[in-house]
Image (tube, rainbow, N blue to C red):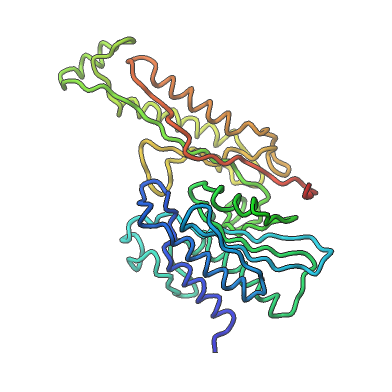
Length: 341
Ligand SMILES: [Zn+2]
């Protein structure tokens, strides 16, 4: 007979084995991936139903289903959301995985392996089974418990996931997101989220005969360059960004985050020379007890990057552009004593 723990592990393994890579993730082929997120949502909705929840499966974008389960309270209590995302980032080369299969979901020595196990199918499954355990134990909560499994988190598509679910009316007094955290200590309770800005920087060069390289170096023109190396200029920008990052490492602090948390990252999973993410613009208001940064973090970061680009493009008649902010998440923090308005 399968124990509840065994059922929970089986559900997690089944969830990990669904390759629910965000279909819009840079470098991925949408048509190959769309639909898998919804499979995970439906798997979770089954557990929500077993927990006595009224379920709702819906999509803003076809094939990208969110799942919601509402366990109605008996009345007079405050409501709570359990939220998590069903999509995962691409696994990279299969050869980098011990078994050669990033989605095998194998249980080995007490560990479950596979892309998305920690971030964050284990959290989603734990939430669903916590609700089911309450139901099986005959516990009735006074407030509503609302379970949410959402799509699109890894590419900042909250309009398809969490925001869509909230807009559909599934709101509550409080929410617990079982996203793995790595703040002051691993898997700590985080009452703040840093901002994130994803941008693409394009550097244009000017083609010429290879013999023009010397003239390019020795007789730079501020109006019409005979030739220009996009790679050289790209490194100027890269080094400026690295200096800014080093500066942030010693000037931006929040007690909830490790020193050096606020960084400029080349997009972590798919390193691309032309793409940078600004991770960890400090939380608005600095978080509980944190240094107040105001809510201008992303704007300031954006201005700073535009000015870096302008500086790198000065001289040589080259076009350097911050050609669009592919995604943006504002920082936010709960304050002590926070109550739903
Ligand atoms: Zn996550």
